[in-house]
Image (cartoon, rainbow, N blue to C red):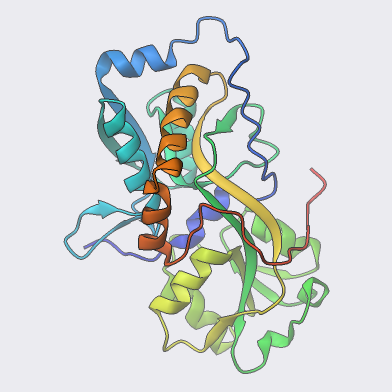
Length: 281
């Protein structure tokens, strides 16, 4: 069975630019993105299979997860079969850019540097960023300013690590590490803090209750929206997908799947007080 916990791969998709400004009315010359998908009767989806609970393998070794099940239902309602291709985050983005996949489903948001090439579907998840720290002493952190000289864990070149660096943290980078390793290193003092998506962090901590770490209460930042990543010019495909997502929101399907995988409704905006922490990109 493949490893279930690898949520920190999602950070390469970024959470700085949170608005999904999809303009379905703009005209794109020779946009045959929906026609191509319709003709082949298949939606090719890039994902990771390692991002719990958005895209992962269950105990029966079946690919599942919030993003996976939503896009599978979208395809079904459009009369399409779904083919999933698994990559790391950079591989997913490259696959979409090259046209090898029609879209990527892996808890994606937009970074400023990608917004000129890619766009998102309408949101399927609203969230925000948080910090994991040690239970015993909060890793000496009470605010973003306290990140100075702390050891921040994560994958290199991600927006979470950029935020940590902006506030003076020392970066400790990982590659293909499990949640168990990330959380254990914080608990043992090898690192001090992990910045990432709140709901993914909460699910990780709930799944590994014996590791003495926690989410730092009251320090939440960067509201964001996630959806399915597509090439920006694929307007007709995005419009079709958005129409189905709207149906799923109205008939309660999105809420049901949200509560199944996150134990809360992430398809609605959170009520927590959030602090903005942009990078000025």
